[in-house]
Length: 115
Length: 286
Image 1 (cartoon, one colour):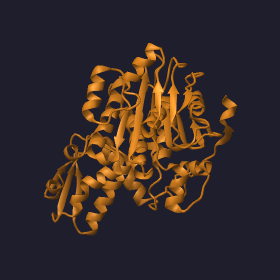
Image 2 (image 1 turned 135 degrees about the horizontal axis):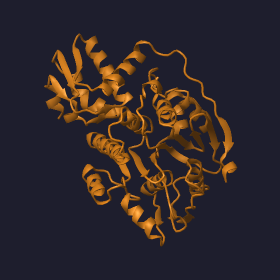
Image 3 (image 1 turned 180 degrees about the vertical axis):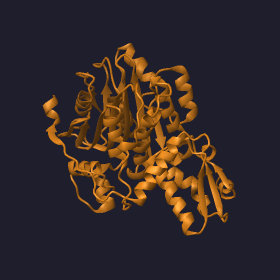
Image 4 (image 1 turned 45 degrees about the vertical axis):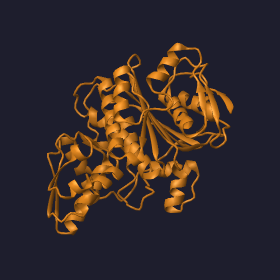
């Protein structure tokens, strides 16, 4: 699989990964070969991919940035509306990150109050 | 091996499920071999069954199901306690027990198989809810599972994660539970950021979005998942690590101390009412 991915210009995500992309480490491992590819332009084809996690979207954007830094191109094609939205949300957060983290307030109780 | 009578649930609320889990593991020593006795229960739930299944899998513990035939057949239908860890087993189990989703064991080293098994689990949950193609519901169901399971393999330093879900058609809600027996929240902050925090403080840091990773764009997974569950879907959310648990509903957050109890790792459980209206999760993803 690794050698195959290395030589591909178009990678069909649903075939090499899964229809739902979840974990960052899986995305990272399976797409690692394309980091080393000599090909100037690689397309990630999202045909038949239903949904991706926020973490997976973040990992894909990091990979895309790596490509840009090496003057190469990584593009995303045939992503459905939900995947496009997820990538856009993460990309927007990278471009314009929130400076303040949200507050969190919780009442403290002992479990014994329920027993 | 010490005998532990798994207590009957006082009610089906997440809080009372937590009480049963607490009473089951209270006073247990780390990795103590326990013999779980289910003879008192007549009904059960993912928040109780999945931590017990995971505990049996990782310690020399065992169980007895008791005489109740409903409980016995339920345990068999959900593949308790071993669970299933392959796509073929998952499909066989679903064929056999149509409306029960088996306990699924996700193994770090399996990569693609793990990803596909998780995808099957999510698709099955979605199917079993019978909500059709109402806009946005698929995303709302998938998002928390993806983020919370992803955290196991990114943060917990364990090689196994457990997921389980049960839809209760008469009660009209879906319960999901996600469990690991990794290093837990406080240890993650200590080892990654050299921050010595109590379980309570570590849980609070997670909810404020302070990632244990150096990347400032991380740390969204738990908080945004909780928002999708509670604000988007009108559900309840529980996060437990070490000796504390957070229970969240739409407008209130409670951190519960769990004296004489310690869960090595993280337990997450949530309940959502069966969705019937379109939903847009993007406002909760921040």
